[in-house]
Image (cartoon, rainbow, N blue to C red):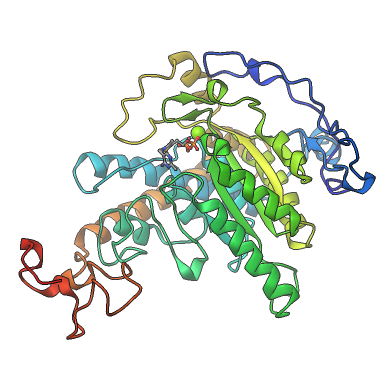
Length: 424
Ligand SMILES: Cc1ncc(C[n+]2csc(CCOP(=O)(O)OP(=O)(O)O)c2C)c(N)n1
Ligand SMILES: [Mg+2]
């Protein structure tokens, strides 16, 4: 059975019980494994995948916890803590820099959602791929792109990971297999599906992948994006071809100012996995250790060649949609409900309770991160702007096209170019 490696099926409390939104959705009476054979459908086409609950710490893990044993080692806990603190401090610094006029365009911060990025991406190998959205800085950091390259990119500087051509919504780094932030919602999902197809091709046809198994791709996107056709098309292809991909939905309950519960006919996104024959899993996205357990299982399934998994992480953003959003639509009690579940505070508590590290050890991690982020700002600020000749680079595939003149020089190098008088 496709979902056999996930723990037993156990259903969530109805979504209506969640905080957020202003309309209770009709409660779906659909059991996860309830997909009935359509008339004439063959037995072999029956869906066998299960939608499973987030409670992955049940069973062995619960026994471990009951016996007073932590579910992570000290090294793992500290790595995870450091990455989450890096994400938070970096984003807070971005807010400061944005309001000081150091960044241009829209900037979407990730505060509150760190458990998802860290819980998944820190389990990847270098050769594995990440595809993100416009809320992409922290995914880049978790994948190992240096903070100074991300900050310089945000400042539009030549030393940024895209040499200043991408900006906030388009982080990309080939050496880290970060295949991009994408500003159009859903746009990254086919790219991720293609990357997963390439990994399968390398493994099965070219016999090129590592002995561990297939390289895995993680596609991150939001709840609002799950009502977009590309999501459904890619779920279909990924399952049809058993691609090594994990679809990670960061369900923060809102798509700009649209409540997920108002916009979605069945708000339990994870149940859409079994509709395509893959496991769908819901996890508490404010608990990094739970996310990590689910992520481990989904990534291993993909690596073993067992195909895709859809994981819905219930999370929350602590700031407005972007730094230009006054965030007046979400109710204060909803915000405070999730603020009280801050994933970094929760992990800190866990680390101390289980004696994985002392308060002062965590403080020194926080200090180290403060220094890294300070240095990133200094580096970005001191870096040069991209040269004018870079303006049309990567815009035109045809070197004889609009961007480059017959003399082989970029047309933008013509001093008359910006005056609109250059011959093109
Ligand atoms: C194809 C497309 N349509 C509309 C938009 C405008 N838009 C920008 S963000 C957004 C909401 C996305 O919400 P969600 O997927 O939940 O992600 P979140 O911002 O919550 O991380 C929309 C509709 C867009 N970027 N792309
Ligand atoms: Mg959302």
